[in-house]
Amino acid sequence: MNATSPLTARASDDDRAAMIRAVLRDRFGLVAHVERRSQPSLALELGRKDGALGPRLTRLDKDCTAQAAEQREAAVLAVATGQPPPGLGQAPVCSWRQMGSPTREAVLEGEGTLESLAWMLRLETRGQVVVDQTGLPGTYRATLTYASEVFAPRDAPPGTGADFTTALREQLGLKLESAKIERDTLVVERLERPSEN
Image (cartoon, rainbow, N blue to C red):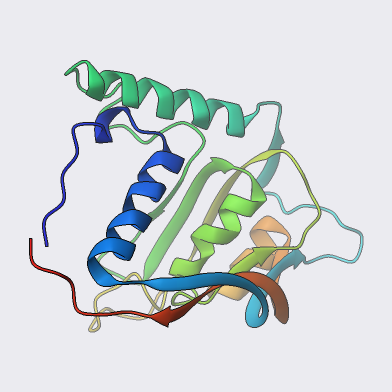
């Protein structure tokens, strides 16, 4: 299936989502709805009884939400005018980066909200949903180093650092707990083979 639009470069995230929904409805006969369901998840919580943050988690005096919006607008404008996006090849401001190595040592670092950090932790939890339940607003900088079970070749030697759970608690002062959390869930009622182009 092919779908193109001259409006894509100038479209907002909401516009793109609406275009995708229209294609799925028109070409695949998709009928779906969203409902609240309780799902097994992992809750990102404060890991210390006194609520203290770990030595590698620091509160920043900046608004990552506003900066991320400015970055998106600048990138959309650049694409619309035929220019390369600003900061091409550089990690965007207010973002998290996950880096592995030939061994099992891994690093997660960057800055952003704890909600966005929770989303990034899904990579190490093999896609299991992680939801921020710390109750801490604002922007943070963090560096987490640990022996990864995910970001390493299968034949890599064991890592020498702390395992992911221990590193999360000792370095950031956070922990993951099993939880059932009410979340918006997409429920597919009907899906058909796509129509011809």
